[in-house]
Length: 229
Image (cartoon, rainbow, N blue to C red):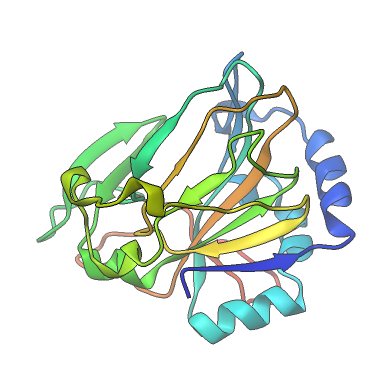
């Protein structure tokens, strides 16, 4: 299944309150007129892990990968100024602790004090992403649009996208958790109103990386302490 939904019936408002209470803690907090983001979100707000990974969500994750761990977590709050069309793309880059040469790991970058690299397609195929919508997403505020089945085709060039009309809108009520694959081709339109668009984005993988490469932000979700590894 390329996308699955689960509703946090009461938890979204509590999560928002706890995020609002967080204190700016250095380079992981990015604030501008265009975006407010918290990188390494679960490291900056470890107390929220218990709210996010409740028993139902843990059961869902375990059914997909019994060895899954968080490998990246980001919080986004997109204000009105950050209103642009997001072109169709796949999520092809992962973040690692150090630059170590390894076959088929390409397109290295270094931003915000961290290395990122494009891993072999098998790593990407085994990953999955949780997107918790803290605000409603619909046609008015640039809801996610996906191309069904595109995650089964490996890395797809833009000239191979096919019928643009085949994209599906992923509307979500506030508190909706979406599950998707990084290789799923996705895009979003401009927002037509000035409401908030807050999302918690969590990437998970059950794979270990080769040749001494390490995920830069690895947290075991089945550990009772949800600890960084």
